[in-house]
Length: 256
Ligand code: NAD
Image 1 (cartoon, rainbow, N blue to C red):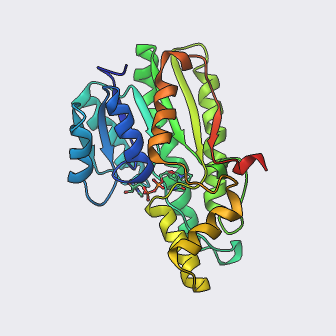
Image 2: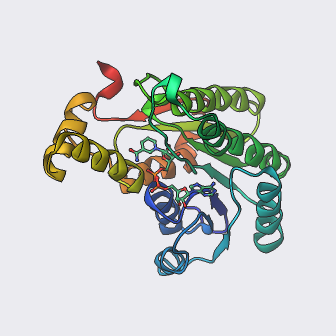
């Protein structure tokens, strides 16, 4: 379905980003990966699906890096048809204890990076009259949790940005939507499970049960593969008129 298209997925060397990249690649899209840590493993996983794979190591907290990444994607693949703004970090602390440099980093990586990548991707998408911008927000873009002030602010912000971009592209073949996962067992969440286990003297299993039990009625993690399939749907012709939604896949979290 996506043969000949190019998808750039930020923060795609791990977790949800890698899952979405693989789902889009399975539909034939060439992929530009981004993120830190092991690069060769994720590149090989995507290449195995028979598409072209590029990589740019932009730090999504740095606008100049994002410009370089978008220029790399355009010069290597022609243009970015599908932009998935996914890179994100977390920091957990009460507001009065929240380190200002962590606030700045979370806002830069989880919110401002999506603005920069979007503003740079839009002109070519509008010219082609086809494009998909998918923002990986969170259920924390819809509801709040204590001790996540920067994350919740950034995720509510990206849901707002999704709506603005959807309105500005409403009469074109470009759409912009957000995905709002509940808990997904990635390194970002495993750190929170580990912190709970350490603070309460719990096993990993008990800490996981408690984490899910507090928020997620299904008591199940959403998987990167399931989120990838939602991204594929947003890219399909059936989703041509799905614009500005913030679609939760959260085991009933936001229904409470
Ligand atoms: P993860 O830690 O597994 O992956 C994060 C990715 O972002 C990695 O590839 C990492 O290298 C990259 N990254 C981090 N900082 C970066 C930077 N400055 N520049 C470039 N890349 C950077 O996390 P994940 O759980 O897969 O999270 C992905 C997205 O999904 C985030 O936006 C997160 O907020 C969101 N999300 C996650 C969950 C969850 O439960 N895991 C739930 C809702 C939303």
